[in-house]
Each structure stands twice: as structure tokens, then as C-alpha cells.
Length: 49
Image (cartoon, rainbow, N blue to C red; front, side):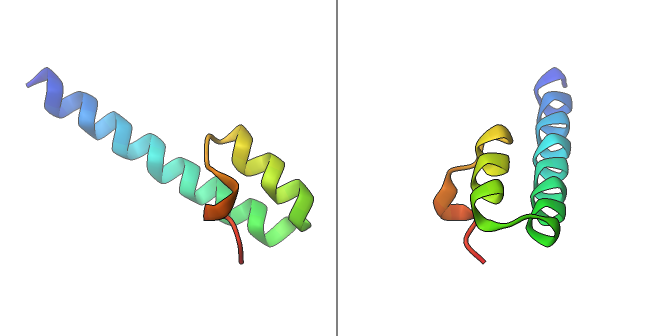
């Protein structure tokens, strides 16, 4: 039961990171975007437009 709940939290956090990345993509230049992605724990290759 606890494992399922933890999984839900992880999925939620991943969803939030994806949203934040999308917002960053819309608002930032490429160098800023790479820094933003690193802050969110993404590797730069996942960020290219």
C-alpha cells in the first residue's frame, strides 16, 4: 500500500517537472533552458526544442 502511494507522489513530481520544463521552454533562451533543466534534474539532451 505504501509503495503504491509513494509511486503516486513520484508520478506527481515528474508531472510537475514536465510542466516546469514546458514553461521554461516557452520563456527562456537555450543557455537558460539548459540551466533550468539541470535544476529540475533533467539532462540537457532531453531539452532540445
